[in-house]
Amino acid sequence: MKKIILLAIIALLIAFPAIAWSDNNNDDNKEYPYESTSGTRYKYDLSNPSDRIRYEVDPGAQLRDSVNPRVDIDRGLGQYGGGSK
Image (cartoon, rainbow, N blue to C red; front, side, top):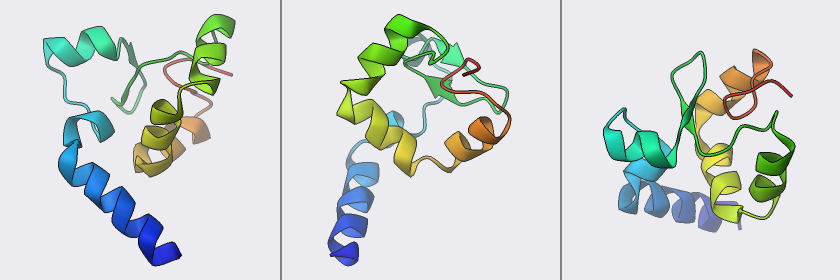
């Protein structure tokens, strides 16, 4: 089961690399307007209550956060999607 999940994550990263780790081009800045101290761009600012609700019903955003190692760095610094929680 772990092997299947790992393969699925790898397949997603290969198919959609810009979704997992956004660069700083203008299109990404529109879709991922929040930037953390580590430079990671986020679609939602979890210090904003309405963004938090949208994040909770967006499994794609949650999946991106679960596979991006920089999210743990940001959360260790008290930043949750570009904001503090």
